[in-house]
Each structure stands twice: as C-alpha cells, then as structure tokens.
Image (tube, rainbow, N blue to C red; front, side, top):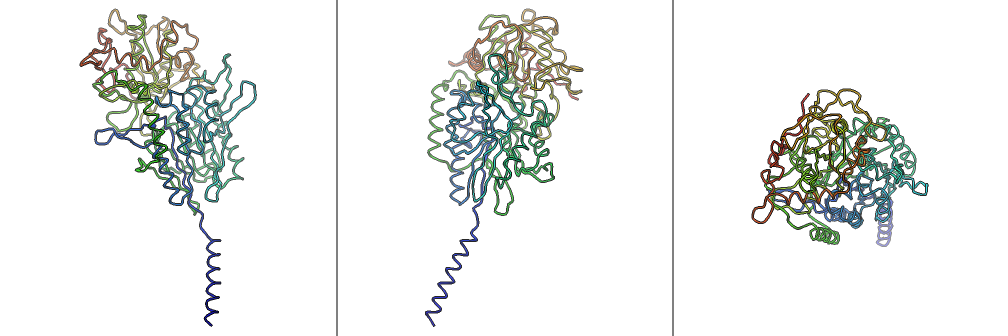
Length: 590
C-alpha cells in the first residue's frame, strides 16, 4: 500500500512539473529609451545650488543590467540626435559617442537631423561601425556611384518570446536644420532625400509602407521617430501625433526632436486604435522604461536619475571627459552674470529660439567684435541663429570647453555683402512663428532660425500670420503679404545712432557659413551674395577670444557689460546683466 502511494506521489509530482513547464509565464519585456542626448555624457544637474553628476550612459547601462537581473528582457533604444551637441561629440565628430553607446548596450537608434552636422557622408561611414543599427524608413541616400544605399527601414528584435519591430523615422526638417550642403555633391546636386519635405503625405506613406512590410513578421510594431511635437512640426503636419493619426498598425511611438517631455500620451491612429506616444525631453534629463506586459498592455515611466552604474562604461566616460578637459579645460575668463538660453522665471523653459536673450546678444557680439576690432574690417551687422546656441554659460570661471559647448558645431565665420532687402528677408524667415504659443510644450513657439543680432535692432509684429513662402525643401522663396519684421535699424558706429535699414543699400553682414553661405535654416536669399572674407575662423574660437578681450581683473578677463570693447561704442545697445538682453529685438504682442 505504501509503495503504491509513493508511486502515485511520484507520478503526480512529475505531472505537476511537466504542467508547470508548459504553462510557464514569458518574461516581461522592458524597452529602455532615450532621445536627444546631444552628447551630454558628462551630464550635470543643479541640486541645492550646486552642480552634481546627473543621469549618464553608465547609469543607463546599470539600469539595463539591474532590470535583466530582475528577470526582464531588456532592449535599449534611442530616438535620435546622439552625436552632436557638446565638445564630447564635436572633437572627433561623434566617433567616441557612438563607441560609448555601443558599450552601453544600445540595440537600435533613429537617425536625428543633427547626426549629419559633420557631413552626411561622414555619418553614413561611422554608422556602419556602430555596435547597434540605425534605421530610417524615409531617409534615402544615392551613393556617388548612383546606387541606392538606404538605411534599413526597421529592425526586428526577439525578446521574451516575442518579436518587436522598431521602425525608424527621420524629420523632413533635416535638410534645413542641418546644413543643406551636407547633402549635396560639388555641383550642388542633392545626393540625399527625405520623404515628407514637400508633402506630409509622403511621410505618412513611407511609414505605412514600413508598417505593412514588417507587421506580418512582428508581435509589436514601435516607431522610433525623430519628429517632435513643436509648433513647426504641427504646422507642417509632420509631428509624431500626425504620423500616428495618418497610419495604422503602430503599437507605440518613441519620439524625439522637439525635446518635449511626454510621459505617455494616447493618440488614436487612422483606424481608431489608441497608440502610446512618449518622449523623454533632452540631454539625459530622464530615461524612459516602456513595459510590454504579459497581458499585452503597454505602459511607460521615467527615471530622472539612477543610483547604480556600470563600471566598465563609467571608465570609458571618465576617459572621454578627461581627454576633453585636457584639450579645452583651461580657464580663460570669469563670468559675473549667467548667460542663459532658458527663462530665469520658468524652470527649463527654453527661450533662445523665441526671443532675445543675453547669450544671443553675447554670441552675436563676438562675431561683430571679431570683424570690427580684431580684423579691423568694417562690419555693419552680425546675425546668429538661436538653434546654433546650444547651452548656457554659468557664472564663475569660464573655460574653452564652456564656450565650445555653446557653439559645438565648429562653424566657420564669414562676412558678405547683402542688401537691406536680403537682410529683411532673412529676419522675416526667422520670425515665422515668433509671438505664437506652443501649447504642446507650454512655451513660446520655437524656430531654430530665429535670428539674434549685433549692430542691428528690429521689431516683430505678431498680430498677423507669417506670409513667408518656402519651396519643397524648406528654402525661402518670397513673402506673400505683410512683413512681420519692421523698423529694422543698423548701428552707425561713427554717429552712435541706429539708422533705418535701406532696402537698396549694400551692407557688410557677418555670421557663420551655415547661414550666410550654405542656406542653413532656409536662408537661401543670402547664398548668392558676394563674399568679403570667408573661413575667417571657427565660431567657438572667436567666442573664446571675445571672452579673453574683456578688461582683466585679478589675472583673468572679467565678463561684464562695462568690460566689453563694444561698450565703448557710444549709443550701442549692450546689457549682459539683463537675461533678456539689451532690447535689440522687440516682439509686439497680438
């Protein structure tokens, strides 16, 4: 009897064991994601008035490791703009950042517009050496031999017994937000194209084609879309929400480009299905964790920081930081008042692309000072685009690295002959959304082409809509109506007064090649102007020299309004102590 009982018990145990094996639950899938990191590998955050290390790649690698330790399947992805933004990317044109991302464990990434700032051919080459895949369904490359060499439109990754497809999407704004010449051959012919530049429907079609191609092969279909939800994308119908609303088949959308913080917004697609849309902000202010639950539900959350880190990745970070400190870490000046890109009144509200700021005046003044005082050329005015001013300079000691982080692109400066009409058109192109409110971001509407000026002042009347006409690539064509920009005046250094812009007169206008020679931000009206001096120097080096030019106190140049050579110009508008600048740009409210 006892033997029979034992036998039955063994059989039952075996049966239960087999049953539990057959009904074992698949592990939960966690998609860890970032966007618009912009090479902030040495990310610092302000805590109790002091700057301390914030979220970094080494901490993200530690997060991935710990999630795996909890039994989860983890996929690390990025939604674009990784290799440009600070000196950590620009010193070797993104190579070290890609190596660091590979070590961190990224599996797939979208192609952001700033991936091309060192040249499209360069990015194409270094992307092939990455330990992860770049994907884009709407970016097309025709090689020099005439053969198409497109990136893969998607990548399928197996995890937790499921197949997850990641579809890459690039913003159609790429051709104007990066230098257009980066995408052309020596004849000015475009070797690259992006679906959606001339018609948003091209973008929707490209995304839908990718969905249709991969949907039968995958359990989940997730977009990695560097598109954004700012005013410009919304007006052009190329935002992430527009793509969701005009396609079918996506399960989630991990976005980038507009630097928005979207924890988890539900957007209905063309078939009425709710699609989760998310974006983590920018500069590693947070990392997202998207969960693909065993019940099929998709959820997401953000982490602002993480306590643990991966030691091997941290070593690589430290080596890169030390290398940059050796190159650019020397102190050159002391700054008395913070030069900021953000509002001093609302935390993290970026204003440099929407209105005058003291750092915009400062950067424009550096070019104006360089040609007038350093080169002894007669420069009437200088312009710089808000999108090219990437970060602030905090009060206290200033190093070359601080300056280079403001202008990390390494653009060359030049001076050209431009008519008053061409200058007016350039200012008008930069003011297309000025004065409007971006409700998605709860901030003034941004335009990377918003122009900060030196030797000039102007007003923008926002009481009526912009009537700028652009071509299919976003280039300026004409103004079909009233100009929003008015009362433009050029500073006369001899009389010390600002005089009305003469539309027929030719002026000497300074700035970076990106704007004045390469039609950056769509400024095609300046591309054919006669050049006075080209390749005069790199923007950040000129900015550093301007810092050094201030009156010295205690062995260092002391950056304050009274110490600038331009302060000696009688009647010149200059006030670095005011975060909103000296009053060179006035926005007339609606």
